[in-house]
Every structure is written in structure tokens, then in C-alpha cells.
Length: 301
Image (tube, rainbow, N blue to C red; front, side, top):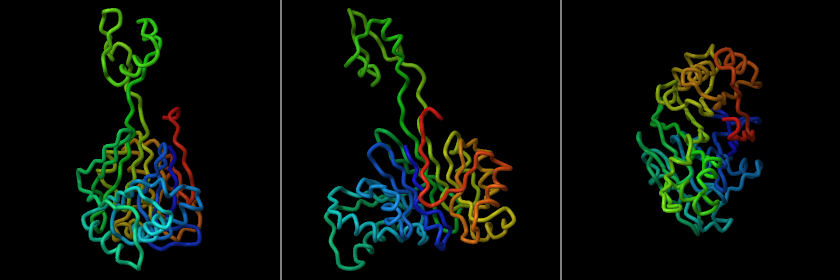
């Protein structure tokens, strides 16, 4: 699994940072979290195949998080996309998609399926789940939690001792089915160990520090709003954003695995101050940069 940071700025783009966008590359699929202006170009520059995007999640309707949608939708059509595109966003997404379809003269060769996020929304895929969590911003906004679905460890030595032949029998037991061998039933619990730990990624979107993120970020790669440094807490409160020190405190309290600071104000020309302040609280902190790639490996979990 790989995280690709497409845009990491706050509100106004700069020469170094574009509007919000994160691509999760998982197996043969790309899942897009937010789609700020310029996202489709960042996908191209990062060599992330936009034709593999099956799902787009928009966390809220501030322009820096969704204004890249019209261009990306048209580009997918120009590329002869035929597969449905699923778009998940807060209430109002169906009207937004309808309005986008009337921007200019073009036709789509695929369908856009709009889904409304809510406080207890959960998307269940065979290999992962994505749920929305209500966060604290100036308009209805949702954070996102990706969790890989993993099965239990197959205990090969135990299977061999029981005389189970490799092949279909292994597969059935891993799927939770019992098998009959030599007149004796063998159950999954006979050859399966503990449940394997999967990847977990949490994205706070734009928010003040809140319990929903703290409660969901244990053992996760946490991507958190860090618009300001610690000295500008009043600005963060006024605009309903977070400081880098507040993001670090969330990661510490929630026992996150790693913290990536995002939604960085254009006032910061380097990462030095944000890193210095944050790492005093949560050592494993990084400042996300446009086009940065983070590869997640099971051996490191």
C-alpha cells in the first residue's frame, strides 16, 4: 500500500504546495481523498494512474477540497472511461454532481454514482473498510478511516502435522470452512492463529482537535490538519483548524503509529518550525509535502 500526497496546502496554493488531495494506492485500485484544484495534474506528475480511481471521497465543501472534481471528471471521459465512478461526500453531493454536469459542453461515457456521508457511514469492501467520522470544522466535515481487512495467520506447521495436503483444503480452512480428512473433521481453529494486523490510515481533514480522531487513530498512520504553528492557536480556534502542536497531541493521546502534518499555511516556507514544535510532543512526526510517497509495509506494522 502507498500513500501519495497530491496537495498539502491550506486554502491558498503556493509554488511549493497545491490544494488538498491524497491518493491511496491499494492493490490495483486508487482511492482519492479530497480533490482540490490541480489534483488531476498532480496525479499525472506523480505517475498515479487516474483511470484506476474507483472511489473519490470529499471531506467537505470548501473549495480547496473539491474544486478539482470538474476537471478530473472531464479528463476521465476524454480517456474513454466506461467504469462507474463512485463519489462520497456530505449532504449536497448529488446536487453538486448535477451542477458539474452542466459546466460546459461535454458528455460522459460512464456513470457517476453519488453517496452521502453521514456520522455512521461505512463502506465495506472485500479487502478493506472506509468509515467517516464527524470532525469539528466551520461547515459539516468528515474525517476518514481506512482499515485493511486481514484474515488469521495460517499455521503451516500445524497443518502439516495434521496431514492436510496443500491446495484447496488450505484455502477452505483459511476461508473459515471445515474439511473432512480420513473420516475426521478438521476445523479452522485447528490451523489458524491470531488475526493479522492490517494497514490503517486516518485522515482528519480540516478540524479542531477532536475526540473522534483520537478514538480512531490507534496504530494508524495519522494525517492531521496542522495549518498553524503553536503560537497561532487563536488563529486556529477562529478558523476551526489545528496547530501542529495540537495535531501532535492528538497523535500522542490516540497512540498513532506515525503523524503526517497537512493543510499547511502558505506562510511557512520551510518545515523547520512545525517539525521542531511537533516532535517535542510526538517524535514520529513528518510534514507532508506535495508529491511525497509513503509506502506502507506489513513487516513494519
